Length: 356
Ligand SMILES: *[C@@H]1O[C@H](CO)[C@@H](O)[C@H](O)[C@H]1NC(C)=O
Ligand SMILES: *[C@@H]1O[C@H](CO)[C@@H](O)[C@H](O)[C@H]1NC(C)=O
Ligand SMILES: *[C@@H]1O[C@H](CO)[C@@H](O)[C@H](O)[C@H]1NC(C)=O
Ligand SMILES: *[C@@H]1O[C@H](CO)[C@@H](O)[C@H](O)[C@H]1NC(C)=O
Ligand SMILES: *[C@@H]1O[C@H](CO)[C@@H](O)[C@H](O)[C@H]1NC(C)=O
Image 1: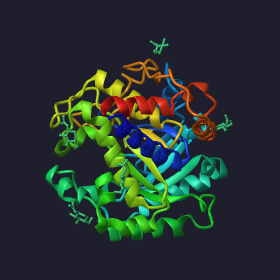
Image 2: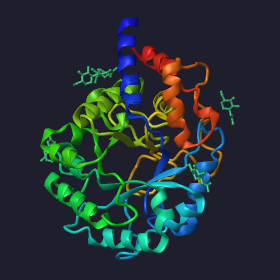
Image 3: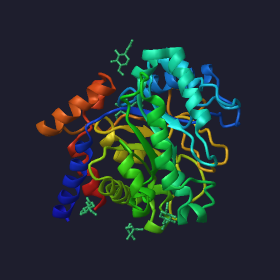
């Protein structure tokens, strides 16, 4: 048992530390839970709460957006942009690609933001995701789960190229352009053209939704490790960013998976704490914005800076020097909070060992 634990742990650490980045943030939809458009003040409040969370293991000063277009407009830039500038929040931008044959409005909004805000805007852009789970939606499981209208791999490749030509000769020209999808879409070899085209691979990882994998909560780490590794294997030498992961605090049973605050906290400790500062992570999430979702993932109520559970990471272990150095360079990218540090190899080891 011990040997098996060590084997799995060594792989996990190799996987995570190979990524060498450390943006830390939450996902953010364009609307409130009521479907009302978020205005600049809404985004600002959100970003300030993310940076000011009590007991946080680091500063959540990055955000992943799904669209450049302000909700309710045709092609006006989303008010998250000025809010990010006001709060020094870095952004993984999103181009919405499903249910459309053209991304012209997305690109118009982006060009307006570049002319309006210039270099300070560009300095906050981590990268651009062309699409979000579009390939999952047209997959067998996406269709079975009625996930909605998606987009095929050839179209995503075309859209990525279109984004690259649109940002050439702008302040964003050097930014990585990639795609976000579920791990299963990346593991599907019919989609490999997207991996070849993308500068980065964004992966959405939810052991909660893996009802075919025995998704009882005590299995969450095993499932996470499997689906993360599947993405990494498919991605080859492309960087893999964790664009969504989390466990719902409320909601119905999904297969054997139970939503609860206690499980959300344990998932944070066992999965999140091993990743924060070691690879880019946009957690799901600070505030729910999809009214159709029966599961509620928000870690706060009404953007209170007092979260639903204690966010402190297990700090009872020190990492070996080599890992420490990696973590330090990654942590310096997410801020100087020393509390980010203690999450260590040993914490992950203990976790994985415990589950095996
Ligand atoms: C990850 O996937 C690769 C390729 O499928 C496999 O060889 C390796 O054992 C896996 N590692 C872990 C930790 O599951
Ligand atoms: C903005 O945040 C970055 C790190 O995320 C930091 O290096 C920089 O100093 C901050 N700028 C201001 C003006 O606070
Ligand atoms: C694999 O991807 C292709 C293209 O995106 C899709 O049509 C197919 O349904 C996927 N396979 C499964 C098993 O979902
Ligand atoms: C845990 O996951 C593995 C792999 O998917 C599965 O074989 C096993 O049955 C699951 N365990 C439980 C208790 O559901
Ligand atoms: C959170 O947990 C940590 C470590 O167990 C503890 O030191 C801290 O006081 C707790 N914070 C709150 C706000 O309960």
